Amino acid sequence: MEPNKQDNNLSLTPTAQITAPPILQDASSSQPGFSALPPVVPPSFPPPMAPIPMMPHPPVARPPTFRPPVSQNGEAKTSDSDSDSDDEHFEISEGSRQVRERQEKAMQDLLVKRRTAAVAVPTNDKSVRDRLRRLGEPITLFGEQEMERRARLAQLMGRLDLNGQLDKLLEAHDEDAAPKEEVDDDVPEYPFFTEGPKELREARIEIAKFSIKRAAVRIQRAKRRRDDPDEDMDAETKWALKQARNMVLDCSNFGDDRPLTGCSFSRDGKILATCSLSGVTKLWEMPQVTKKIAVLKDHKERATDVVFSPVDDCLATASADRTAKLWKTDGTLLQTFEGHLDRLARVAFHPSGRYLGTTSFDKTWRLWDINTGAELLLQEGHSRSVYGIAFQQDGALAASSGLDSLARVWDLRTGRSILVFQGHIKPVLSVNFSPNGYHLASGGEDNQCRIWDLRMRKSLYIIPAHANLVSQVKYEPQEGYFLATASYDTRVNIWSGRDFSLVRSLAGHESKVASLDITADSSCIATVSHDRTIKLWTSSGNGEDEDEGKDTMDIDI
Image (cartoon, rainbow, N blue to C red; front, side):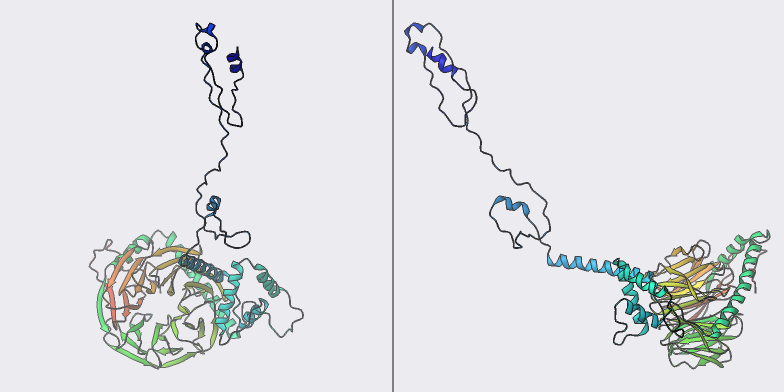
C-alpha cells in the first residue's frame, strides 16, 4: 500500500539538512473499500533538527593578577574579542610599590647589620686597608677616620656574606692565612692583634698570678659553704633580703649646684665620694653626708664618674676633658691619665688596685698602670662608643658595654674577647660582675636588666626593671644576695640575687638617678641624682628577726 510504503521510508535519524515532514493521507479518501478500517495513525517521531552550531565556552573567572600586561611584540595588547578579558591584570599603585620597597630595604639593612656584627673584622688600620684593597674597594675616603674605615669594611663584608658572594671573602682570608715568603721580615704579619709593650706582658703575668690566688680562695670558700653543716646559706640569704626589704631613706643632702653623675664608697665605708657636671668631686664624711672632707678641682670639663680603690685610700675620677685623674683622700693629685681621643664615660679599678680601666666615646677602653701612669692596653672591639666597664673579683676578666648594644667579656691574661653577649636592643650603659664569678648583670636604654651566665654563654634572666633607661647596675659586694638598679624613672629597685624578684623599690629622688653604690657590709646604699641630692638608704631594723641568734651577716675581709 502506498501509505505503508511511505511509512517505511521515514527516517529515524536527523539529517544534516532541514526537510519537510511527509504528508499522510487518509486511506478512505482515495479507496472507497477501506472505509471500515480505522484510520492509520503514523508513529510520532521527533522532527529532524539541524545540528546545533558549537558555541565558545563562556570565559572562566580568574583571580586578578598583578603582572603588567605584556604582549608578544612588547606593546600593550588591545583587542575587542571576548577572549582578551581572560588576561586582565592590575598594576600596583605607586604608593604600595614605595611601601614595599621601603620594607624590603629595611629588612635588607637588618640582615646586613646582623651579618656585620657576626663577621670577624681586623682591628689594625693597616690590615683594614689591605682587606679593602683585596675586595676592590677604596682604601680610604675623604675625611674618613680609622674606626669609620673599619665600620665600612665590616658593613661591606656583611653585605657580601649575605648575598652569598663568599668567594671574595674566602680569597681574602686565604691570602691572610697563606705564608708570605716574599714579604720582608721586618713587616709583621698581623691578622687581628697588635703587639703590646713589654709593660703589658708583665702586667698580664701579674694579673694571672693574682687571679689564680683569688679564684682558689673563692672556690675553696664556696666548697666550704656547701659542705659545712654549720653554714646555712638559705638563712643568710633570707637575712640579707630582709635587711634590703627594710631599706628606708636615712638622710638626704644637696651635693652640688649642678646635677650629680657618680658616687662611690671607700673600702671601709667611712667616706663617700660624689662628682657632678661642674667637674668638682667632693668627699663626704659618713654616716651623715653633711661634712665635706675634701674638694677635688682639676678637671676642665664635667666629671662623669668616680670610684675608690679597693686596696688603699685613693680614688679615680673621669671627665669629659678626655682625662682620668688619681687622687688621695686629702685632695692631692697623684696621676693624670691622658690618651683618649674623646670624652670619658666610666672608670673602674682592677681588684688588685694596681690598674685602672677607663671607657670613652672614642670606641675604645684602656688599661692604665696607676703607679707609672703609663697606658698598658688600648682595646678596640666595639663599633660604637664604649660606656660601661667592670672587673671580675678574681681579676682575670673584664667586661665592657657600649652604645652598640653589646656586652663583651675580655680575658685580661691573653687580651682576647672570649664572650659577646647580644640581647639588648638599645645601648648598654652599665655592667657588673656577681661575686660568684660567673654571673654578669647589664642594664641599658631598653629599660631592662639582663643576667648573663658565663658558663652557659647566654642570657639567664631578663628583668623588666624600670619605666626608663637603667643607668647603673650593681651587685651586693659580699655574696651577691641582691642586685640594685638605678634608673632615670627616679627610682632604685632592689632585686633578689636568687630568683630576681623585686625586693624593694626606693623612691625619693625628684629627677633622674645617675649612680649608686653599696657598702661592703650591705648595710647602706648611696644614690645620686640630677636633682643634685645625695640620699643614703639604710635598713630600718623594724622587722622582727626570725632567728635572734643571727644578728649580723658573716663578712670575709
